[in-house]
Image 1 (tube, rainbow, N blue to C red):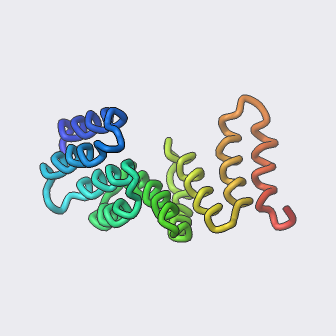
Image 2 (image 1 turned 135 degrees about the vertical axis):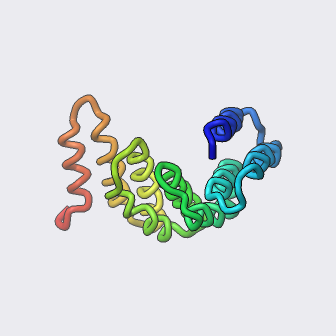
Length: 166
């Protein structure tokens, strides 16, 4: 879509916190109105609707829309966001193993500002499967890069959590 549409979507999301829980349907209606401007086969429509359902507490309604957006060819940054958000939603609806399958390949994807979100969400999915040490390893590894000191030791601790003799 064009930049004007993207700007209006961003503006709508900028107002999200002004909606109360009882106004969730009103917010989703704003997003639906913007989606109605898109071609019927656009992957952006189900993506934005999934985000709206997800953000208003309806992971169960969001997952099929994320799937649809990805199936329609959502790419790049938004596809990565969809995978992160869908994995979180899958965990919320009791399907963390599917979240792990979806996000694990993202660990090898080209690096961007979403790397830590991938690791944090994957850690939550792993924890949902009782694989807490693996999840903690991911989170410590992500955190280590941001520490002013102790980066090497925290990275080593993260590695040792999942080492065969760890």
